[in-house]
Image (cartoon, rainbow, N blue to C red; front, side, top):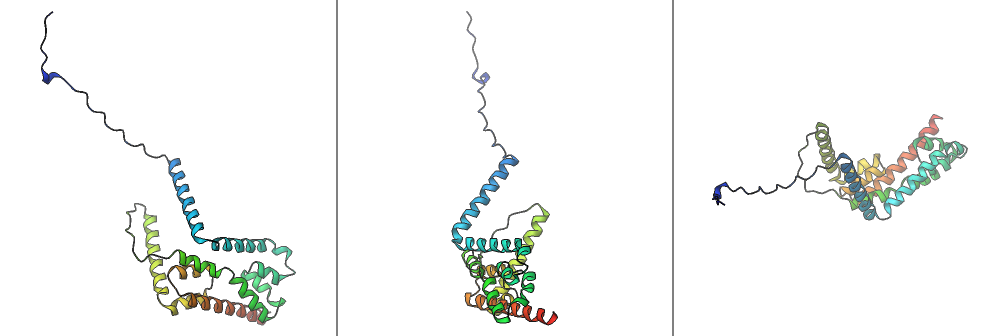
Length: 214
């Protein structure tokens, strides 16, 4: 047998196996992750809100129930107004009760969740540190970001002085504006007095205005 010499240069080593790239998530998996993130955010929000979120939900259900029962409460407009204080039901209840009890009871009902909205805003304050914007390829998302920045600047400008914030809450005394006021650091005294006095003026104007017209 003849031995053949093999040169080391002719030996070939097997190439190392390259790592396989991570598989891209499917659209269904992406939607699942998004739903999980939203549920986690909802759980954290409910935990931070304490009983105020539940309180707001309960009175929202009362209002929806009163609206559903409106055909059966047409003979009791004041009760309907206390269940669901919508503008139409407030106008219908004007002739059923005098001005003073109308304003007092209506103010108590409309302000039932105002403090909870304000406290929730306090628990989720706006940060003064601007976030680093991420590049967005979608034109709609860029427009939405510009709108959010504009509204954020407007809210900061309105809430950085008690007179401006109080004026807005006096003419728009509702939960959404009170939550914004709490989130942007408006004084609780300014928010409370402005919203309560604005609500009382709103109800008194309704009662006197409708009484004069009809």
